[in-house]
Length: 301
Length: 301
Image (cartoon, rainbow over all chains, first blue to last red; front, top):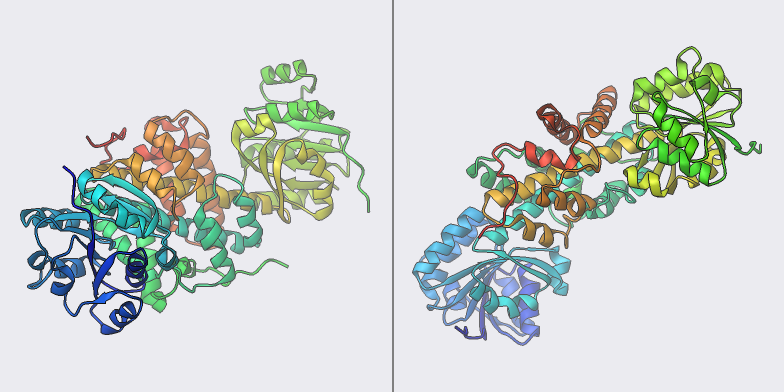
């Protein structure tokens, strides 16, 4: 059955990611009505040619698609289920496109609830950060039915470069959790290796260069390894957000009775970093949590 | 001071790595006299045009350079220091090129001992495996003085593609330890992530594909991730050898009073794999050590 094309879009959550994404939709010619808890990003959005909404209800009413880009699971739950929220306000047939990074298990519950109200939920968390959001080069991992995926695909193409339909509802969030697991553990691995080199009196810089040519090569060794060498922890991706994602990983694995020890090590390191006041540093600052490390790194004489 | 060029080479240790390396030197026109504990690889070497030796002493006497490619630290110690070993047999000015992967701390002790006998030690562990040894495409991480490095450089160019002088004696072994640390932890990360996807009912195959486009991308996700999906654990690199290297990492870090928790997790996983009889499987078989994992992976219907 052919699905009606998406013309009217609601957008909820104009943060550092959401605002540039909503503006990209406007620039691509979509009519977007956006709501955010604080009024100033809504003003910026209106100045960029979008339509402002003063409530969730206004952003969700009479739309073909409602996009959400929110910080965490409880935010998504509130926006969906609160009185005057998306479930109450959206008409039947609306597809709700949740691009937040939240719990896969909660996503499956939300999808079931929305279905009973005649709403489709597509989970489509992204990676690529603020730059990816601004340049519409995000990687998007999508969970949902084939028809719902096909329906939102034109919208996703306005926001990202790599769009992969992973599976049913929740599958996008599971893939994102796997992504965040690998990134956090690889950052920890690179941090431990460069710390070991430094402690052994060997140049971390040359070690990283030599290792980039072999099986230790990774985007993390390249990008985050360089940040560690430069002690440059401007985000990037904030440690406190990665800690939130690491908790999603462990909550999900506990529910599945899986013990993921390396994921646990990375979570603990992110927790130490946040506890030490580094929550707004780039996650590569995890290198500063290793005990007895001599940091910043210096090359041996 | 110009160093005498290397014409006569001794080679000790004709294993799966050493034999093709020694043959590559012969093919490049070097006169190589090789010894190995068991006679059959020596015969193969002679058939390939090399000169066979029936003792360490014979391989080490009157050489410009003695290459060693041995399994572990005690083997190197024995070959160097045993009566009739390299230290007793080699003439002053010989450079000993240890291409084994062994302890960085022991390497520094050996270098000091050799220096008192007028011998130079260069540590030059490799990565790239049997294929790299056969095709002379190894990555070689080198520790030693500038003059000793310059002297053996032509030999290393006959064996490898990427040759990086990391620092003084032991620095090559430190870089190799860092390499093995990152590879083992990244394998564990990829194993945990694909296991999480499978347990959550999401295709590990599509998850890997989606993740290769972002910050989770690595050679390990590419190569070892594919092996995990295919349940193909033909080595590759044997788990028991990686366990040996993981023990070098932890011995070195303990000596430096560093606590490297992710390296510890990977070591424990390799130990479980070896204990379960998987020592001769590729190290990517580490995915089979995760508790409650449903393995081999299958895609959801």
